[in-house]
Structures are given as C-alpha cells and as structure tokens.
Length: 171
Image (tube, rainbow, N blue to C red; front, side, top):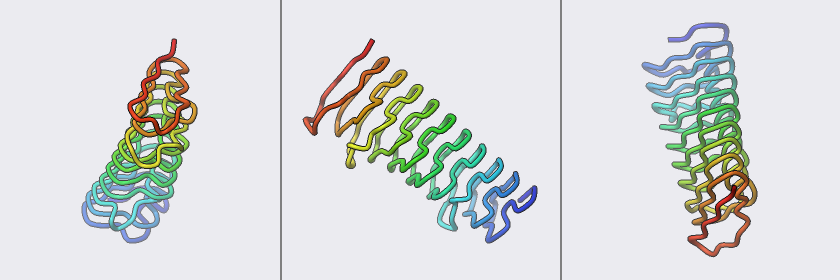
C-alpha cells in the first residue's frame, strides 16, 4: 500500500506500507512500514519488517528488523535490530542491536549493543569499536565513550580507555 506522491514508487514489496511524500520511494522490503515525508528511503528489498516513522526517519540505510521513530531518527546507516526513538536519535551509524531513546541520543556513532537513554545520552560512542556501552540521563556518556563503559547521570562524560567495566556517574 502506498499513499502520497512518490511513496513506494520503486519496488515496493508484498505487505509493505508507505505513506507520505517520498516515503520508501527507492525500494521497500516485505512487511516494512514507512510513514512520513522521505521516511524509509534507506529501506531495501532485504529490509524485512523495518519501521520508519517521521520526517526522514530511516533515511540512508535501514536494514532488516530496525526501527526508527521520530524526525531524522536512524537517518544514516542504521544497522539490523537497531532501535532509534526520538528527534535525531541514532542519526549517524547506529550499530547492530543498539538502542537510542531520546533527543539526540547515540547520534554520532555506536558499536554493537550500545544503549543511550535520555537527551543526548551516549551522543558520541565513537570509541565503541564493537562492544557494549551504556549512557543514561541528560548527556550521560556524552563525550567519547568506550567498550564496556556505563555512564549514568547528567553530564557523566565517560572519557575512558578500553579498560572494561568502567562506571562513571554524574550529578
């Protein structure tokens, strides 16, 4: 099903839904949903059961089983099983099985199984090469956060090395 100009325009798969100008206009996989202007443009035929809701959500690359809800959520290179909820959550290179909830959370990049909950939480997980890191609270883990680190609270920066099991708390 497609509704609006250019929605689901090219190769829309079985049981897929595209609503909004330019939603999933390139390709859309089976059982995928794209709602909003330019939502789901990164979906491919392999993007099975992907969800993109909001302006440009799931924009450049949205693989199977990923969820992007909010304006620009999951916009650039969201990986499989990743979840981005909130304005600009998970906007740039969100790792496999990573979770970004809140305005700007996990917005720079993340490795596998990283979690950012709160405004700008885990904003820069660029140091996370591929292992778990958690940032919670406003700006929790907002600076360079590395493998196996946990940063909880307002502005707990989490600047560390690959020491493993590092826990930092803020205000």
